[in-house]
Amino acid sequence: MRRGRTHRPAVSDPKQARQIYELLRACYPDARCELDFASPFELLVATVLSAQTTDKGVNKVTPQLFAHYPDPAALAGAPLADVERIIRPTGFFHNKAVAIIGIGEALVERFGSQVPRELDALTSLPGVGRKTAHVVRGHAFGLPAITTDTHVIRVGKRLGLTDSTTPRTAEEQLSELFDPSVWTSLSDTLIFHGRRRCHAKRPACGACPVAGLCPSFGLGPTDPEMAAGLVKGS
Image 1: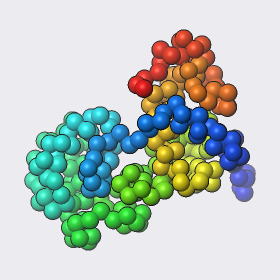
Image 2: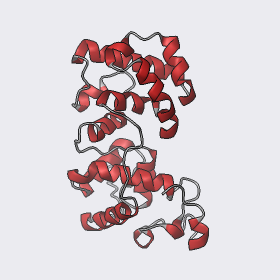
Image 3: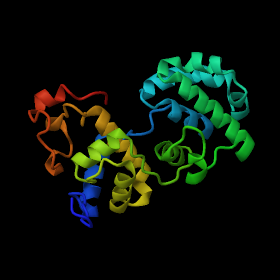
Image 4: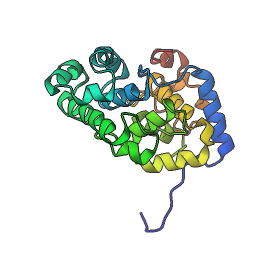
């Protein structure tokens, strides 16, 4: 690539991008964060645990975890071995246990046991990157946030909304196309689409609500009946 060359997404028109979003939103009106939580603290911990595993898997272990350690102070004083035992099914349980105990300690010591809203403050916590911070900002605090997880990046690139697989670049390009009022909903909707139709290996192209606008149409089966068999969930 020549120095100074700038790549732009295939869809650079905000009106067309909005049309794609509205069609997907109509297909997934209940698109939301699929982690169970009752507070910003619970969502923060659950999101850290969700790395390299499914939301359903996390939802199976968090009730027991929060029953034992319901707040930052309790988690900060938790025995590492006990936390590891509870969260073991989520995988990478040692590193995750160290991280969430560290989160509890940091919240107590630096933030008065409250989860901060600011991006820089959130990403200063153990095990919390930009993606996790945006999940918390968008769903716990109702702040505009684009969460560039693997589904958002894959689906966004296939739809021509971004040309990048780099999370920060994809986030910036998506933020230019869409109004901040829909950033969180956009992320949820793209994630739902990625999990249910626009699969990594074999997308259900023939059952896609934005097939007519998708520059990647044909990556998966285009026959409606065959594609319908690939659709997962609602």
